[in-house]
Amino acid sequence: MTFLLTVTIISGFDFGGRVGVAFPVGGIARTTRSSPVIGAQAGYNWNRHRLAFGYSFLSFPGKQATGYELTIHELALLYNYELLHRPNWGIALTAGPGVGFITRRRETGRETGKSPDCHIGIMFSQHEGRSRVAAGVDNLLFIARRSVTYFPALYAEVSYAF
Image (cartoon, rainbow, N blue to C red; front, side, top):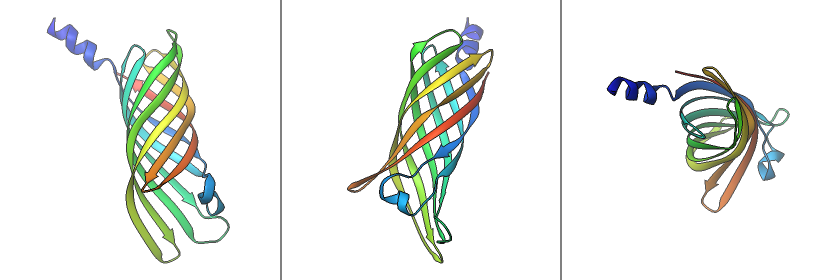
């Protein structure tokens, strides 16, 4: 019985990566271009639910030759719920809190800081054997004092379940 319980618990874990592109909007869009998104996730799946811990790296370069760059290292705890659940695929809503470690460079100057953030998104996922492939839209909102900075992102994920 203990063996069966252990196998059931371990079998829901998956590990994988994330790639995509994020877009600056609002006031920050005047000075920066879109950024690649590169990341990794470790998650646990159970029926329609998935809980994941993820890391993402974003680097927004300045427009033209301004010497400006905004770099974000972000850690997040994400919860996915499949609204439409089929044996091999599903459509899920994603939400969760996180924290971003942000560095802004302008020529020789540099500022660093951290900011709480949250994710809100929707994704399409396909499950085939032990692999999971997903694509979706993720809205990353950074909350700093009295302002909110918003980065929509298109992404794809690939993970392998044990």
